[in-house]
Image (cartoon, helix red, strand yellow):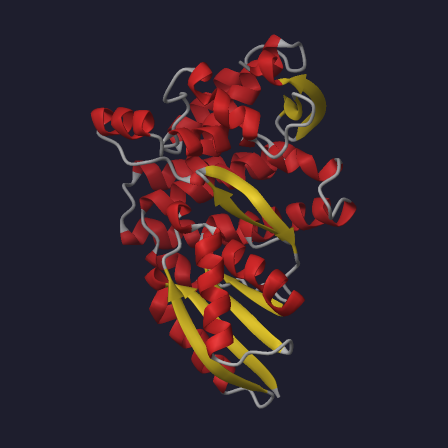
Length: 339
């Protein structure tokens, strides 16, 4: 009998309960407990991992336990991290509930948490046994979650599939122009389902070539050097003050990736990797989808995050350049040159 423990984002409680009901009906499974967590970047910490482990201890979970992560990327990261260290490792499954997690965060086995605001500086490698993708929870998503998913999907297709990039731009542009009505969201989700599957397969294919993120897999970091720095900056006192003055909420991960991708396109043109006009093309596409494209601060303000980025080695980073939509290359780049 498989002993199941469900850890879920409190925002998707209804879907988590349906997952619990489904698991309880299986002959070889018994659900022994569930735990709601707050799943956002501020709570993506070791203390929340410890909370999950204490919950498991309180329930008497042993090494045969199986954890079910129900939520977005923060949830799957936290649960994957906890599964990797609890009693030296237990198994887990993922039920990603956002577009971003279905195309990126729940795939590949990298489970990270933040330390002092620095993104994913602590982490483990542990693949979920199963990833269950359902469109059901997507119908409850708000605009921010759609935009975050758009940023990651477009990044993925810039890496590997020009045609699907153009299809994705078309769908999100239409959704943005129609104002995120329920009817517009339903039409978008129906159109996005095969593209979500395609994006997930692209990531899975790349990960299988380089499971420990030593070389080829790093193409998936397109836009992330700046994205992680933006995510750090916006939770500093200066960043919070600046965002408040601009009257906007913090950028989601996908929005930060969108900004970082435009910056990568700019540097690709500057360094002769891409033809002139790439940045303008991507910027126009992203804006049509409602995505931000401008850095919210000076590049020098991001310096502390660049220096502490886990991808930096000997003051250099494997920077992802865009040759054209559908093709990228990795080049060593000095952090000072990024600034």
